[in-house]
Amino acid sequence: MCRNVAVCLRVICCLAVLWLAMAACSPPGNDYSEYRRIPSEGWLYGDTLVFVPQLADSVASGRLVAAVSHDSGFRYSELWLEIVTREPSGAVRRDTVEFRLADGFGRWLGNGLGAHLQMSDTVVRPVTLVSGRPVKVRHIMRADTLRDLQKVGLFFLPDTGR
Image (cartoon, rainbow, N blue to C red; front, side):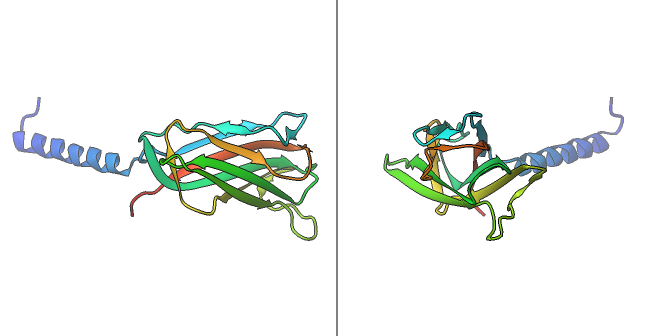
């Protein structure tokens, strides 16, 4: 038991303020990230990757970031992706993202260890996502099958209102 009531009340108040400060610093809960593995046989032109973000709110606005992971056997210096979302109004939105994977001298760009490299890029415009509504990603390269890609991912970074 607390012998001095004033000291106990100060401790309780300090703990309450600390708890509120920590709760205010927690993420808003609308962030999302997920990767899809690409089969070892390659990514066929007609294969669409489907991501289904589950957000804390039913609708959230922010930035959508696409990421790719490949190894040094990838044959192209760039990769083009089409990302399809549906606005809350139901309007379909198609964004094209170009990943420049190598410079003009053939040196790989991006980050990674050894032969495995990763790169990410923000989709150009701000996006509004509806929780549970699919986001579709497909490659729009001229090749029918892309080999030596390992993963494709999506990240959603919600607006913080600041």
